[in-house]
Each structure stands twice: as C-alpha cells, then as structure tokens.
Image 1 (cartoon, rainbow, N blue to C red):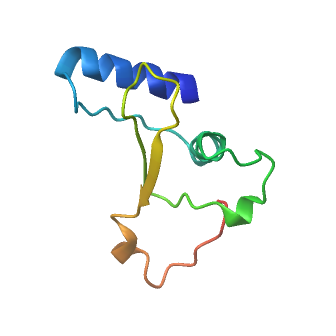
Image 2: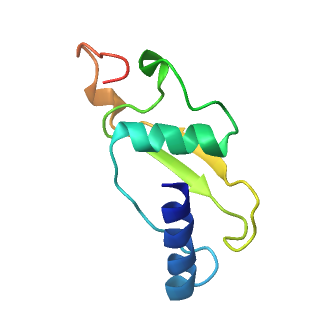
Length: 92
C-alpha cells in the first residue's frame, strides 16, 4: 500500500508538476497499516484504537517522491459534525 501511494504521488507530479495532489480511496485497515508503517510504529495493534473514522482523510505529504524520506502524516474528519448522536464503534 505504501509503495502504491508513492507511485500515485510520482504520477501526480508527472502530470501536474511540483505540488500536485492525488487521491486514493481505501478501507480502514490498509489506511491504518500504511500510517503505522510510515510513522515507524509496530503493525500489530488494537483495532479499537485506530484513528481512521468513516469519511476521514489521512494525508501523506511527500517533500520529494523520488527520495526515500518518510512522508508527513495528517488526519482530518471533515464530516465529524454529522457524527453527533451516532454510536461510534472504535475500529469498525
């Protein structure tokens, strides 16, 4: 997954130049494992502690897609205001 994201980032730069962006959509587990890997954390984890809610956005920002440097990770929940009153099940 991490290599697919890096390939997608390279392709975006080929098409749009420096600063280009790309979007990949996936399920929670591959997103979370990619984030753990990028952050250098162990992959075995408690699914109830994942920070990867429905409709969330986990972003990987590469300074240079051709360098092996670790991308920066950011996380947002742009639809969080819709969650009020909803029973959230961690890790689901």
